[in-house]
Image 1 (spheres, rainbow, N blue to C red):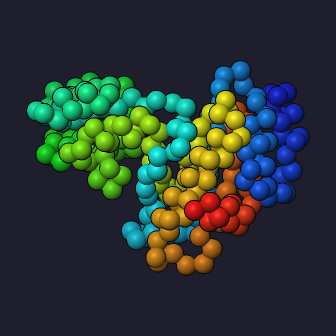
Image 2: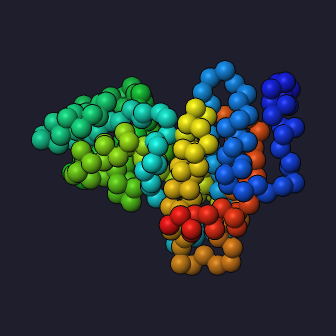
Length: 236
């Protein structure tokens, strides 16, 4: 059963309306439901078929104001690259011993994984553990690289991955309620711009079909996809 605060927040939202991006963010920012600092999330339904390899939208973007959460970063490397990772601020660094720990202990006290290309054969042994959790390093999103310092720095600065799911929807965090409307709007526009730039050449028809915004404990708000795309284009 929904709580009183949720019910009150829901009353302020017209379920039939498609709100302008800034107005929707303002409503979400003003509808604090929980006592903790809620995360604000965006869901973008795309006009793609994720079953087709050439329409599997995926990418990364550094949000201008971060996500409000500092990710715990694991770097799997050896030699000089281990030192570089530690100097860059990685939370955990190691080689074969780290792979063995994950494999034998199912250790997963980290949020992102970076690996150097020469360690990917070893990382492959734990692919069945990392993959389902979205933690497997991938060169397409910059987490398989010899430039570990840059990769760590970007993630710590608020770099987020986005990827369309089987239903054709991209889910991503754009910050915390404490950011306020202006910073949340900046982050939302940056993310939407990245998703729009990732439009596959083979995608036909309307690309951004719907956009919705919500906080962790709050009701969702539907955003006018055409207006959101226009705002992003004007800001580009």
